[in-house]
Length: 387
Image 1 (tube, one colour):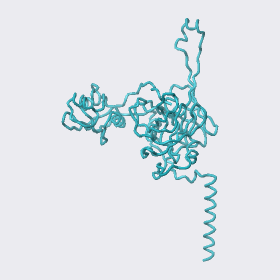
Image 2: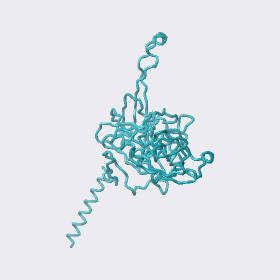
Image 3: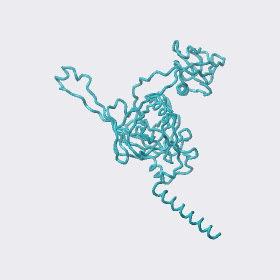
Image 4: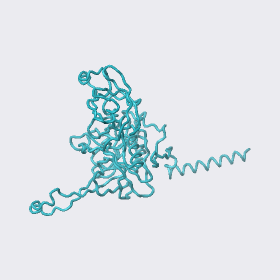
């Protein structure tokens, strides 16, 4: 019995020693994260469901979270060749000479989300860029290839070719709450990687005129020019969103910043890598938020929903029987209370696949079947306020 006990204690001692060495030299091996593959076959790392983003009390230090997330946040430098629109005009050349081609530099941030080299950033960071260079925190640099962009959410996917890339862990942006502590990581003003802290100030911010599809996380963590495309992470160092824009009268942080939730970013990533673009549903209507004035004008007896004030001739909605004055209350089983919710719900429909919509017409309720088409590409100009 003594020999067995001695053997047991020796085995336990050796295992504890191995655990101590691994925890000291390779702590990432002991993380409870798991590799998963997205629908597009991309290797991503997601936090386990029980990895709570809520801190019961204020933590004394965000150092562990910063150390975990920061290596996967990169700096993005772009250059664009610009030629004066009148450079070929003889009179312009006579007075101003041959201006030639000039290069404009741009600055932003990005997040490595896969060991395969996929980098998530904002579309406006790389839009129209002729050359893109990504710099890691360890000093390594790589030219980046644009895999695809989605101007309607202001997201872009880049690809770099380097070995042993640090990868951020994807958090759950749908479980966060107002008041949760967060960190913003990026390269503001090109001074170098910077970490700022704050809280989630609001959720579901929309109708800001920044993107077509808006469902922003609002934070008071300092975000400045150069932070665009950087990471908003929770106290565990897991990615919650991509920092995109600020509200500012001075050009710098005023405590109101906006980030695209990681749930939206992951869907865009899957679509771009799988199909080369993001495909969304479209029904061809002009929606408006329901107001007492519009309800009275169209004679509708409804308290909530989105009123349709225009229907495209021969479009999917017209073919399904939707008329001006109808109030859409549900798309499938999802209630819609304002225009942004309707836009998001319709965009999530699969083009060519029949779906149901519940509407109010006068004082009656109807269920219509509609087959959405593919949403046309957006031609929106870039709004102000992006950083």
